[in-house]
Length: 432
Image (cartoon, rainbow, N blue to C red; front, side, top):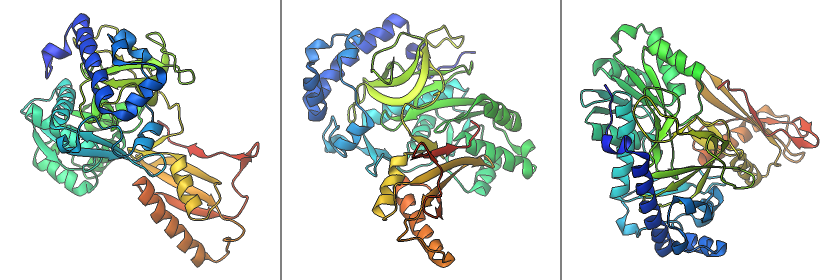
C-alpha cells in the first residue's frame, strides 16, 4: 500500500508542480525585493528586478546567497518579516563564531512540520506508531523538526533528545517505540547497546529516520541488520528550514525533494553555471514558501546529483543523491558543522600560531574531534602541569565556539608536518 501524508501534493503531475513553482517563485522574488533590503541590493547589483522573473526558467538570473552573506547580514539582515511576526529561531554554528540564525513565522513552522510528516509517513508511520526522537532539541533543528512532523502524523511522540542511553533504552522498551529518529552514528551505538544488554527481543522498532551527518550504504545495512529495521535517509539544513527538505521513500535510492517548497538546482561550484540534469555538482536551493527567512539560490556547498527517473513509490518529486562531498572545507562532526576557520579564530585569539591539524575519527560509532596545536617558542613549556592547563583552556574556548567537545593536544613548535610549506589542516579517518 502506498503511503503519503499529502497525496495530492506528493504525487502531483510534473505540470502541476511546475505551475506551483512558477507562481510561488514570482511571488517570493517580489517578497524579498520589497522586504529584504540586503537581497534587493544584491539583485540591483546584478541588474535584476522582479519583473525579470516570470518563471523557474528565469531563476538563473538571480544572485546567489552564501554562508558569507549570512555572516555579513547576521542577525536580522535577511529577514523577510517583522520580528513581531516571528515565533521561533533555530540556529547552527557559523564559520567565524557568528551563528546561522533562521527565523520562522507560525506558517513557516507549519510547512516545515508538514515536510517532516511526509518523511515519517514515507517510512510507514501512522497515528498508531510511537515515534522516538533522539535528535538534539533546542537550537538544533533535528529534534524540533521531527517532533512537529510526528505530531502532524498523530504518532505518540517521545521527545527524548540525544544522550542518556539508559533512559533511551528504558523508554524504547517500556513504551514500544516503533520509529527512531537520530543521527546514524547514534543509531549504530544504540544498536550495540541493545545487543550488549540482551534487549533485542524487547525492541519493537520497524524504521529509522537518520540524518545530520554523512553515512554510507554499509552503515545502513549494518544498522538494519542489528536493529531489524529499514533505515531511511533525511536531508536538511538550518538555513533552508531543517530536516525534511528531502527524504527517502521505500525505494531507498535517493531523497525526494519537497518541490512545492524548494526549487533545486545543480551548479558548477567554480563557475556558478547551472548544469544539465544528471550532472554532478553543487546543490542550490530556493525557498519559495518561507516567509521569515526566504533564501533564494542558497549555495549549500553539498555535491550531489538530481534525478527525475520515475519512482516506484509514486512520488513525483525530484530525487537527490546523498551528498558526495563538499565544495568548501566544512566538516560535519556529531551532526554539527565545523569549519577549520572557526578553530583558527580561537587559536589566534588565544595567542597561538595558525598552524594546527584537525583529526576526525569515529570510535564506537561516535565521531571524535582532536585538534593538534603547535605552541610558539614563547609559550612552549616542558612542564606537564602548565601544558595541561593550556590545553584545558583551549578545550573550553573551542567548545564555546563549536558547540561540541574537541580534544586538544599541544605540540612543540614546527612539529606538525608541512607539505610544500603548508600544513595539512584536516585528517578525516572516518570510513563513511
